[in-house]
Amino acid sequence: MTQETPPWIVTLLVVAGQSLAASPASAQPMVAVSRGPYLQAAGPGQVMVRWRLAPPAAGRVRWGKTAGALTETADDAPVAADHAVTLTGLSPGTRYHYSVGTPEAALAGGDAGFSFVTPPAAGTSLPTRLWVLGDSGTANDNAAHVRDAFLAFSKDRPVDVWLMLGDNAYPRGLDEEYQRALFDFFPGLLPSTCLWPTLGNADVLCCESNPSSAPYLQIFSTPRKGEAGGVASGSPLYYSFDHGDLHVVMLDSMVSDRTANGPMLTWLRQDLDANQKTWLVAGWHHPPYTMGEHDSDFERAHVMMRENALPILEAYGVDLVLGGHSHSYERSFLLDGHYGASTTLTAAMKKDPGTGRPEETGAYQKKSGPHQGAVYVVLGNAGQLSQGPLNHPAMVVSTLALGSLVVDLDGPQLRATFLRDTGEVGDHFTIRKMGSVPRPDGGVLVPDAGALVPDAGADALVPDAGVDAPLDGPLPGPDGGVAPPPDGGCGCALGGVRSGSAGGLALLVLVLVGRRRRR
Ligand SMILES: [Fe+2]
Image (cartoon, rainbow, N blue to C red; front, side):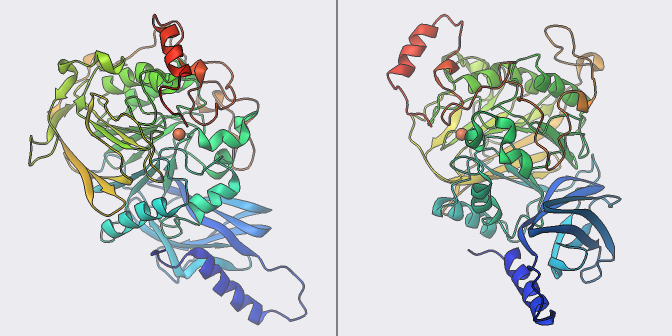
C-alpha cells in the first residue's frame, strides 16, 4: 500500500496512549475506530461523517477550520457501532479538519489530521476532478494497481468527486466484503473525499430474498432529500447532487423500477427540469451500450435503461454517461438518439464520428441543451477483466484493460482520461461547450407518457429509513413490480430477454446456447 497512514494505525496509537494512561486495574474494553471515518452526501454547507466503533459506544465528531483547534463538537449519542453525524452550517469551498471518536476521546484524526473541503457554492465554475471506478470490489492486486496508478497520477491534484458504479464489494456485497474492498482498501481517500455510490448486482447477492437488507443500504447515506443539490428522490438507491457547475445523477439499474413512468424516471425528469448547471454526468451499473462480458442488445437491465433513461437524459443535454458491469473499457463516439440494438446505429446518431482527441480529429464540440450529444463509457474494469466480442459499433475504443476514469472539468472544457493500472493513459477525449441551445417552452422536455405523477415529496416514494434502519418491505422491482431475487450476478437471467419483441424466441435460444458467458 502506498497510501498515507491509515486510520487504524492512528487509532492504535491513540488507544496505546490511552492504555498507558489508564489504570492497570481497569477492565473496560478499549474502544477503537474499526471503520472509517468516511464522508457522505457532501453539500456546500454540510457534510455527513460516518465511522464505526468497536465495541459499540457513543459517538462524537470534533471539528474546526484549524488543525489542532477542533473547537466544534457534534454528538451521535446512542451507544452504537455505526455512527453518522451531519456537520451543518459549513462554508462552501472551505477546508475543515476533524476527528471522530467518543465523547471521552478522539480516536482517529485530530492533530494527526483528517480534513475535507466542502463543495463550492452551486453554480460556481471551478476546476473539478472526478474519479470513476466500476466493479472495483475485488480487493485484489488488480484493484490495488488501479488505485495506486490513480494516486500517483493525482498526487498533485486531489479528487473532488469520487464515483463508484456498483459491484463495489465482491462476491456478494457482505459487510465484511465491504470492509476489505472499500474501507481497508482506500484508507487515505475515505476520510477526505466524499464517495458517491450506486448499486451493482454483486452488492445484493448477499440478500437474494430481501435486497432491502443489503449492507450497501446500511453503509451508504445518499442525499435522498436533495440536501446536496438537485430534487429530492426519496430513495436511497438513486439521487443527484451538485458540485459547482456540475450536476451528477446516480441511477439504480439493479432493483429499482426502470420503467419510463416509474418513480425513478419520473423523479429524473423533475430533477433534470430543475437543473441549470453547465455539465451533466449520469452513472449507473448496467451500461446502455456494451459488447464486453455483457451484451446490451439482449440483457434486460441494459435494454431498459437505454430505452427509458437515455431519451430523458439526452433531452436534458447529458454530456457523459458512465456504466460498469462489463469488465472491460469501452468508450463511444459523441452520440444522440441511439435507443435500439447495436444494429440500429446510424451515421446520423454520431454527432461527431471522430475520436474526440484534440490532436487527432479534434475535441467534441457541443452546445448545452437538448440532444447535442453525449459520450458513453463502460468502466467495469477496476478489479478484473472478462472476455467479450468488444465490437459495439457505437464505440471508439473497446479494450480489455484494467483502469479507471479521471474527468477534469475546467470551465467550458471536459477532459476525460482512461488511466490504466500500469499508469499509462489508455484513452482520452475532450468535450468543449460552445454556447447553448434554449429549451423549448422552458418547460419539462420529456413529459410522462401517461399522467404525470405529482411531486408528492421525497418521503412519499420510499420511507426514510435512516442510517441504521432497513427499508420497510420489498424494494420496487425494475419492471415496476416487486424486485425479484438477483439473478446469479448479472441482472440479466433468461427472463432478461426482452419480452414481447419479435425476435424474442430467437434471442432466448441464443442465450440458452450460451452465446456469451455471463456473470
Ligand atoms: Fe455487475
